[in-house]
Image (cartoon, rainbow over all chains, first blue to last red; front, side, top):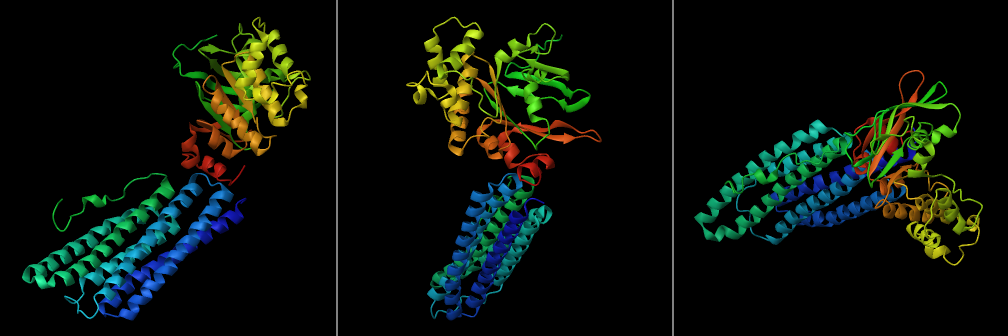
Length: 229
Length: 264
């Protein structure tokens, strides 16, 4: 094997991406947990941790630039490095969604939650779980799994639509609920976007292995607030 | 011998079941390849897989080595260049060649071109021909004040462009280049590559290169060659496609392994 050093660097790159992914996964789940408990301190920690996520992303980006400049990758290597650039940016944006949820928590101040959170933590768990498996599929270059995960986005969309309808009922019942409903809607929208970005990561994994750049699942097909667009 | 009038005109050279022998040894086997007009086609592959041998078969240059022979056909503009009535000198006149090491004649810059043109019976205005050849080879500005100095006084990169000027002075249709930049520094290499982009407007270029980045940067099509077969192995083209496909998503695992540096 004439690529020992390069192979080692590729492995290190994948390890770093896994680490970034795990930071993002924690941020997503914690942002909803702290919201559920109305834990403002916890929310502030999530916002601080997002700086670490951003820094990690820049570090990986720098590592990628060095690999591209020094190794002049071709074919599979090129697809892996180009896709990694895309994937770390998806992860960083997912981290921003978690930070957004933490911000909502802080902004709510002393206001109690409009309703107990049941489906929103489910969405967060589901999204984080999909993310975890999507990154495992990426590291193992497992096309079958990468193609299967985006289908689960339907479950996340279904939860989102359910939450949306529920919150609309609160609003219709009493316009004083509008602000608090809107906060939760915002939270669930962020979580819905997490799952969409997991789909993008899966598409990259398929591309790395096969060279085919296709949409595994067209997220435009989803219901928009429970109604066909 | 056969002429192939059915070949699409956009292909200037076409090989049909081409095999190339050194004595009894089959160096290249089963090559069916079409070289497109006004394009740059690169031939890549590990050392000893027959790239230069294949290139030299395109203008019968192999015949200068004793004991070489071919089977199959090399069709140039519908004409089999190995047909009995074809003069190999005429073939090399229309399909020119530039070699790895610049090989200017030990004559003045001017005479490198003028002498070549005279041998090929050029009767026109020699000053004009020298200037236009050097212009096309992007060398004119650097040598216009010293045309009567020896061609060997130039730098390696300039010598190589002089050889290109010499090749195009006799108006070939195709220029074959065998590792034309491997003896040059990176700047001289880039000059040759830029020159190739200019030249392909008027000529068809086929280049053998070990430099993968050069093939990726400079060519439109890439042929990947490798030794194949059982026992006595000989070189063949295992994948031929658009360059951008070869270097981003090759179809053949062996091409993938070669362009990513797993062997070769």
